[in-house]
Length: 320
Ligand SMILES: NC(=O)C1=CN([C@@H]2O[C@H](COP(=O)(O)OP(=O)(O)OC[C@H]3O[C@@H](n4cnc5c(N)ncnc54)[C@H](O)[C@@H]3O)[C@@H](O)[C@H]2O)C=CC1
Ligand SMILES: O=C(CO)COP(=O)(O)O
Image 1 (spheres, helix red, strand yellow):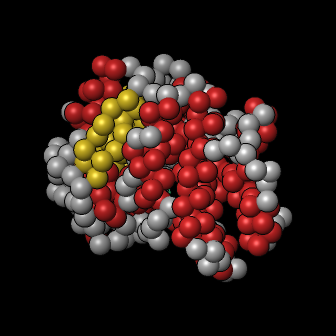
Image 2 (cartoon, helix red, strand yellow):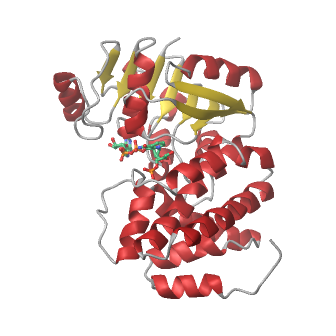
């Protein structure tokens, strides 16, 4: 096995640390300055401080060093992946890529695996997703994830290759379901953070999680996903984690909205662009996704929290 991780953010670094306890791994980042920093400190102080690197973790900023690895884990934020792939198309044309990001692309409404397929039609594409905080993985805490790959044989190979002492991978062939679950749970987490920040209570949060799950299913089923995928780690599992923990950046953005505080714009919060992309895609497809739409209205300051809660609460009564 030879695995390289592309993107030295918190998640890419955590995966590289876990995998390097089993076999040599190369972690690529785009800046030589950052690479040097990590080589000197044996740690990614910029994104995942306090998580020391195992000896078998090599660092590089040269893509030539990683293009011949058997498997490439792509851990770059969602809205950046198309440009990254286009810039490196020649090197990655036939690669085996496992997307490790969560989101929906603003311009196209596509998830990460679909964007890779779009840019690199000859690449093998899988998705690693599910409830997991980078800091937990790096500390060696037990974590269960979903490995989605349309090709069952390839999916099984990745499942074996990427399972470690603390990462237990389950397999599915339903890429679309896994993409949508991982993307939309972040939107619902923003909404949940907002109700907690505004002190609207845990009952309101439970209502948003449940009705948010209904929205996740609505979009996923319209795109051909299997309902059981949404009930799994990549859907329900990640929704439960992200909507209930202040470790989540999406939840924390929501908290700030609810409290009327500013939020650091440099923090990676995938749910913001994903809410806008999904609201647009849902409008085109004629799907009713009121929580997603409300999150975009909150983010764009078209509604106050009180107005948003009122608007959702006073929608026409319906069957569950
Ligand atoms: N942090 C976490 O706990 C988890 C994150 N994820 C997902 O992983 C993805 C990445 O998130 P994080 O690692 O947390 O973000 P992060 O904010 O810690 O790091 C993002 C990294 O991407 C790099 N980057 C940005 N644009 C790039 C480009 N064009 N080319 C190359 N590198 C680029 C940045 O330099 C930075 O190192 C997101 O989609 C996130 O949803 C998934 C599960 C857990
Ligand atoms: O995806 C995650 C947990 O599964 C990480 O959540 P945040 O991106 O909100 O921090």
